[in-house]
Length: 422
Image (cartoon, rainbow, N blue to C red; front, side, top):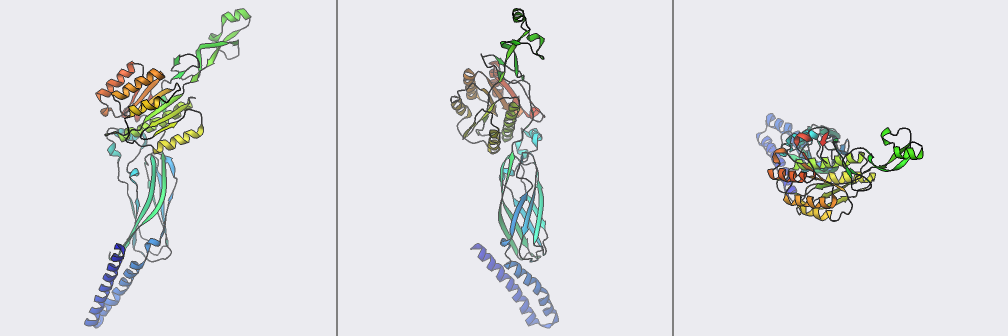
């Protein structure tokens, strides 16, 4: 109804101006008055034509150079306008309506310089282009968007405005044009100084990156070229009158379960949460390259579990899940963690990646350690935001044999990220 009333108001306004000018020419008479009337007549006719011209019938589309990328990448976008009638237009303002999910920038590890001030990475993205179509039926407006943040971003609308030279008639329409941008978490190189692994028998543990255990012998065999001299079993060699070497058990990498804290609390450092996601997906890839089987457990309002097994398709599911994952309000992380760990029967190496630490979480970690024996914590937070209580709790757990690694802005801006103490 408002649109109809606005249209009638403009229509009456144009005809009122035309009637006034015509009346002036009729009553005044003479060459000058009629010359003014006929001179302004084309302008009035154009204004009337623009008023009746339906820009909502335009065909507007959006073309992206690619729809899937990594966080921090850029994308080239072209807005294409096709119109059937070559009605002359003086100018058009084309504006892209960005979703709130794009109101921040991701410049890879450079963003962690602001780990203590994440608001500095918030921006109000706006693309507004002025074009002069004239009689063109096809118009293309290219632009580029850089530093795409992690997530699934929906570009839904394009706003187009136009007007006559004098601004008497202004037309605007919002075209619903849907496009999806998917920015996977950026995977960072991680240097593991130590990696937890265990042997197939017994409770012996090792923090070696090697795949062969040279301390626990499972039998003997005949000497083969390439065997070390120190492996020779001299007693058995003397008995059998042949060179015999010790046969070592194949060391089996520990099955690792990575647990992410996706529970929202007041004062949450959103940039530290982004680091948690990046480190989590990077740790999975790093451990997988070292022949470990890695599972993922994200705990938020919804608990999502990716089993520990060698399945290439699972990696893609994990990436998609971590792309969408956002902190959500729910029960305390320590409580939900305790509940989920009671469901886990396997003797995994548990790696917790968290942004905050408190007394209940410390108690939960101690209980997990009693059941699982191998627990490590990756604590990610800005140096100035780590409280004295958190320092103390982490120190106590470290003294009890829990592996602790604290990653602040100093470590996160480095490439690769150094992770030790696991």
